[in-house]
Image 1 (cartoon, rainbow, N blue to C red):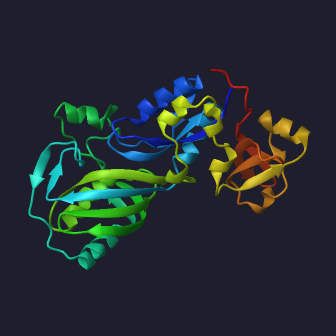
Image 2: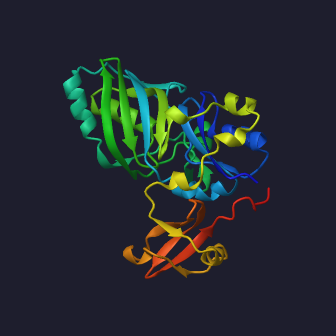
Image 3: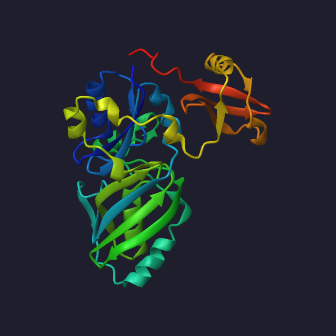
Length: 298
């Protein structure tokens, strides 16, 4: 069984689940999962976990993401992107670039964002996009999201190109619509590229075609441990301690006493192999997930 993470360059016209389906065939396993949905029309970085790495999805989904987005002023759509039906038309904004940059600054930090109806978020057990396709409009509660940075790469009264670095759960489509309204106009997302997700960036992303043509697609899998940059790491050099950890037993590890109780951290071998993710509890490390690479079934 192979284990690792492949940094896929998702093309336009495919859902994230379509990418997962193709990778299941490429790597001959059902244990494949992505780490954060990209809209079908969007392109860019989509880290996908294979084998035991699927157990890391919850940690990788939490990572910050960076996007390049083009928004078009003058109308909104029901999907908030270029694929939807026009719902609102307005005059173009009259702001100059300096004033537009000032508007973007209003969206920095923690903000409240209402998720779009065309999204996978559920309301009373039903995905919003299914309700939207039935013509059912429901009230969606705003959610807190964090936007760390917005760089204005280009702006005129018709279009703007932005680079946005944000936390999990942020809808860039919604940000475009909200920016248009804040400019006294309207807007929708015309183009979206994710350029980074956690430690994965677009420079190292690989196309599906390249993976399909590769004789050894395993060579594109990145080590699980390298994807957890920023999570405290404890090194385990004694084989007997490694064995007990892999059996789920709490162990005293050097350095764990320096961490705040409850801190999520990882235990790795002296060779850098990920052994477990768990929590610091006083002078002990309590494993919550263990990784016996190569032993997982289909």
